[in-house]
Structure formats: structure tokens, C-alpha cells
Image (cartoon, rainbow, N blue to C red; front, side, top):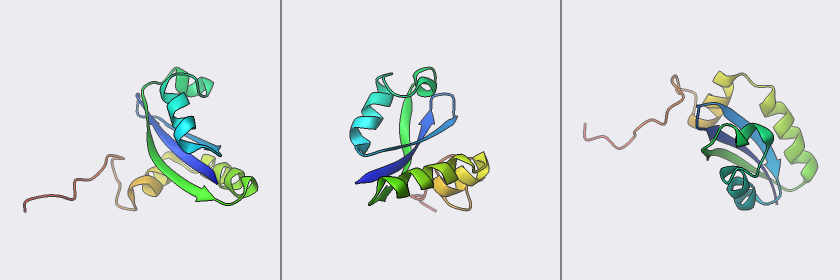
Amino acid sequence: MNWVYILRCGDGSLYTGWTNDLEERVRAHAAGMGAKYTRSHLPVELAYCEQFETVHEAMSREWHIKRMSRKQKLELIYGPDAASGEKKDTDTDE
């Protein structure tokens, strides 16, 4: 399988990439062995991913996501009501 993923970096920035081994790629980024960008923006955490059958589909989706605005990426990750880009707490006592 092929994956497109978005990482949330330690400074709040977002990084988008694709891979055929999601767990290993996220581990590599977290260990500072991933992309040059993420090495200087540690720590990183997986914020979003999509799975695809072919490399072509994954690379095409990555291309489209990279052209999205930050707001659009946050909406993709957290839903259309994501104003601040932070996860919303859905488990409230109210």
C-alpha cells in the first residue's frame, strides 16, 4: 500500500509526504532521519494519512495537498470546523 501523510511539526508547521511504509517513514522523521525540513522542526507527530493502491495515486494526492492553504490542510485533518487547528475535545461533561 501507498500512503500520503501530514505531520504536525514541533513549531506547529505541517509537512506532507508520501511513502509505501507509513510506520517506518514516521519513525524516520521522528528520529531526525526523514526529510531535511522535518529534521529541523522536531518533534513531529502524524496528524493525517490516506491510503492508496498505487504510487501514482499517492503522489498525485500529495501534489494536491501540498498546494492547499494551511487552512484547507487543517480542515482536512480536523474537519471543516477547525478554526484554530487544534484537536477539539469531543468528550465533555456538558
